Length: 325
Image (cartoon, rainbow, N blue to C red; front, side, top):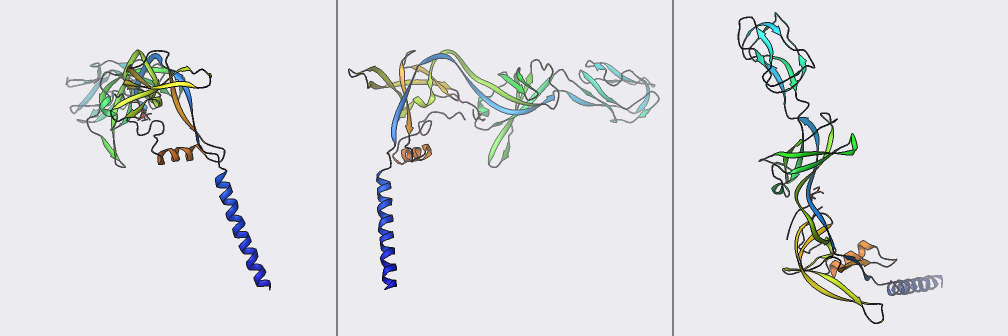
């Protein structure tokens, strides 16, 4: 008898649990697609490639003797500032003196009058503290956008409220591969190092392209249909004043940064356009809603729309931003 009672209890629990699960699935609030709007703006767009580096001297070298000989006179001391070509050490036999290979500060000196030195012997070191550079590593997807002569903005951890200016002076022609990705060194010479010291860490944004006073919209507002790009324009409200008239407008795009994309034609300043946003119910996360969109073939913002991605930096590595049409 007890065995039959146990079986009946199990059956009732199974049926009740299945009914509860079915009801809970039926009462889930469906994902609703809502929209927000923005307007076509006019302003400046800058495409940047970013990277981290450290401050270094463009010229830092050992002081060496070209010939063997006895030192007659040492003409400089440590911490002296010299110019390129200045005489540093002379010899008793009248041989050509040791001269400064470049401008800088004598940071070390290990020679004195009467010493005998050998050819190629290192007798000191000279560092140029006035001409400083920072070297950053740029991803192979962005390196083609970086050219010598481009301007850059540099910040340093030691001076968080100050921005330094620089110019790209060298772009490496050979990359280094790591984990299947190649990167290239880019050298930026600082225009005015001010208080920067060798070894300080830097964050650099190289401006690869910029346009002033152009029309632009948020990059996620532009959709792609085959080879056409378009936005949804919101017009005046209908007679009941609750719904807005909308229409699709084909546009021609230009460069883009991480947030905005240039509109070359198709829109005018001040027009209201839609920004579709998927809002999930209380029982579904936004991530789950995006997954549902993908299953239904609806592209999420910035995905599968044929618009260049600008993720910091590589963005825009880093990524960094990239221009595109």
